[in-house]
Image (tube, rainbow, N blue to C red):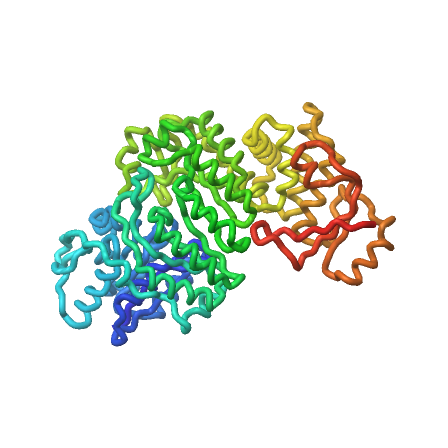
Length: 566
């Protein structure tokens, strides 16, 4: 028997932990279980052809909000080609309305609901050994021969330590250029109304000795990044601290570990450990979502905002940990003006990345159940993103979409940080800056095209020149120097930008250094760029900086900078 476990990931660098876990748990050498991974950027026709050529006796799809439309489209087409092929679905996107999915898509014969490892194993045993009948297997919904749909009872949660480690020496080469996903717990102690993790309130943890052995496997293989999929990783202090301590003590100097945490429950002992970490060893994703207390309470979220701010500030001061802070547009009680306050609050925390997410109304969540009460209108198709609510209009959502794009380009890329830091001194709020820049992009049609880094600088300069006509606040010569500094921080560009000054008078002095540092770049500046950007006023005397591209900041990817005595 040949079974195809099919995943369609959002990007090439992603992988699907679920299908690997199903295969590892089933562990049946007598069954040919094949894992097929595609991306949603593949042509459907190419995927269809490949699935057809693969043959197989059962076709399974792993379903999420980013791929469900493509999955349902492909199931219809493959059913036309192979009408007798059983098609099974699993994953969060079909677990909470399995009956409706089967009712609307007659080509689908079975859905695995919720946690799938034991369910998949029993299905394999049923097919291969006749051990079970469908009526015996918990956690499935299925179609009988007469078309009747049956939904069996839910399955009990698994002991996390019984789930096999999915990675081994044989398959590691295929993950060479991909993010490694790993989980040490399932469930979440919190009940945030927009999140599916709130459905499973109990939290289960993998045994410490197993986790340490598996962490060492990643370290030994020198993987670039391990992304923990645990929800609220640090909800159990000892579990989280053991892992942070282990990777600190066994650091290989290469591997980065990503954790989704609740910042306000980070303890002093954790902070002391963070201070010792190599720059780039870990990165933290912190879901703030809103700084408006009525909203936080309404979405059943637990958060001490002042404590969170203090923790984020402390971690920032260590300059060794990347922090990614999230906000969500469309939450109840937070209107457009109040969201601007949340934006400015979080921007003031100086995260390495600030993500503006837009509410996804997920099936099975409390937000989905209360959608009419909140007046939430959202896309019918995945990812079910909010269009408007009782508090935020669609026009306002569109404005926030423009701000999101500007934040992504100019802030989250970490390519313009000194430039943005300087310019923010002249706008009322950070939001005001990004909003006006977004409107400038829209007015001139710049958001209709992709732009390289240099063009982004040129657009920003044009925006400031136009804005300066009325406001007359920004010293353009200072801005030109800071922009040039940011540009060379990232790369030794071949074509000098139009605003760069002629460096001919320094050419002879620079040659001495270039003989020793062939990949570096040297540039003359009129002041201390970093301090000027921080203060908003020109500080320091003219100076020469050498940018070393072989030595980079692991958090920002900026070249290291040395001031020369010339």
